[in-house]
Picture 1: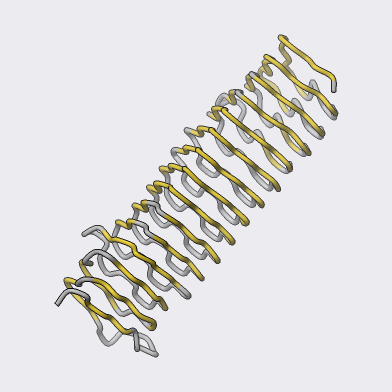
Picture 2: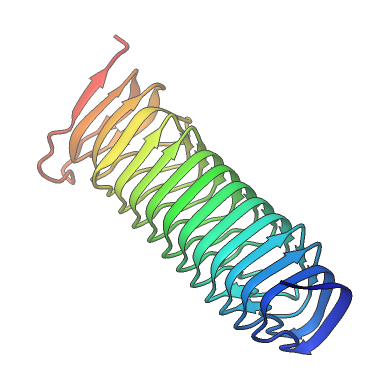
Length: 282
């Protein structure tokens, strides 16, 4: 493997089609596509300032690096990335990628990030401004995670999340096979039109959660007082440890909980209209 140290590049495609290359303490200034169409690249303690530095790259490790806002759309159409201890200030990262592992990474501007990605692992990752994060992505494992940003995980499939704080309105819409463990989910209209969404020991806040869901499972979850009008037209099996403010027109399944302030079953409830609700506080 060739090593390049303590230098700078700029302009368009300065390292185009490089292979078996290690960069140490290298700065890539303004320009485009610095490492396009490369394989087996390592970058340590580097600074990326130009647009699109890693497109169509296969096999790369990034450690202790900085992507400034100028390095927008830095990682697209690539595969087999491991990124550790890195600050990603650049927007619109990670598109159409396969094989992404992020550990100890901070992304303060994550809007429209992680679109159409596959086989993703996050551990100890923090993201902010994360509107529309993970759109149309699949096979995702996340642990020790904090997110601020709305409309996340829409149209995702095969997702497992553990020990997370998700501040996100309209999360998990139209998802399939998502499981969330031991997490806090804050935001309105959670999980609408989802299929096989499972929440285990989670705390949920925000109005009208978990409506129009199919195959919804809740195990030992709690709900904040603002989580009202829950479960409309949903098929679910739920064990809930807290009182709920209101439940509206669940379609079928079962709900066990201590108490509910208002149980609304009106003329708009859909068949089979046989959801069994059991109150454990008498």
